[in-house]
Length: 331
Image (cartoon, rainbow, N blue to C red; front, side, top):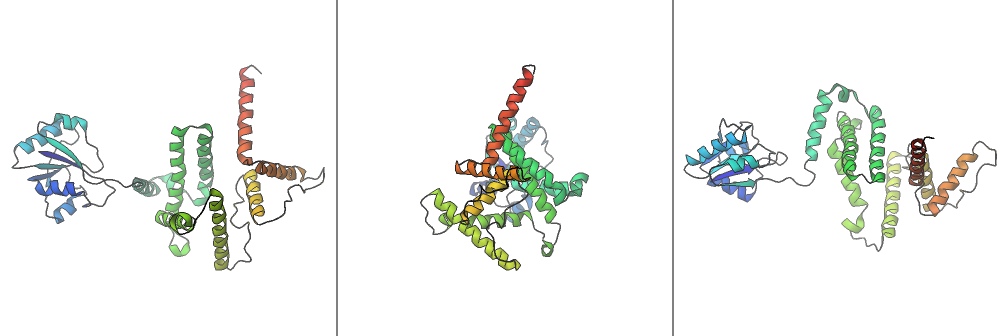
């Protein structure tokens, strides 16, 4: 009997299933095609001594013949340590002349493939001249561009493209974390694990109805709790930084698109209990008249339960379609 043992390179060596360890301990021979297989030290420490063999790993038919011969000459079961991360090759399995089974010795947890991105990002930062020169500031434009490209795939319903665009946004996060990791913690440095820890703690803290004892009856209750928690967080940050009185506007990113900014400012002011003042503005002919009118339009959109930024984007798309139709009709 031949056992083809698969294992994940993202799981610590030696963390194998009970079935995998049983097959390894029952085997008369454990074969590996490389002295660099990550499972070798763990197996050797456990008393399972693999043999490093010169197997034709690149040719599945030739490898099948090699393994079939090894099983035929063995006194008992044989285990073949497949290269880490490889899948069961159907050509290999169909070419074997001996009974065989495939065992998955270790399985990736959800999210384990993100470890590959960490490794690739480290390599790029060291080995690619362009990636090596980038800073937080130089990457800012790409962070914004990738976010807008992801938004476009959602608007157009292109879910296949969304998968790729989300990856591009994620890459920006990994890139910024890798750059930050080059600074000592005392100078504001942090790692991708610090980013994950901070996010995880925030999500747990802001969802006491899921991870705590708070009871909610609706999504509205969730939003109200969320705002109260954020308010407390802002007050704590201001106190730690020695800042003045906290403001409901603390944390509003003024670098966002103007319509989104106006809507967020209005939402914050409304939650603080400020009387509506969107109708107030410069007199006709004043240089700020258009801006004041836009603020009133934003207020109208919000009153109708609409997001002004998305409404304008949708209108822009409709306009673009009319322009293209006009062009195609010959103008």
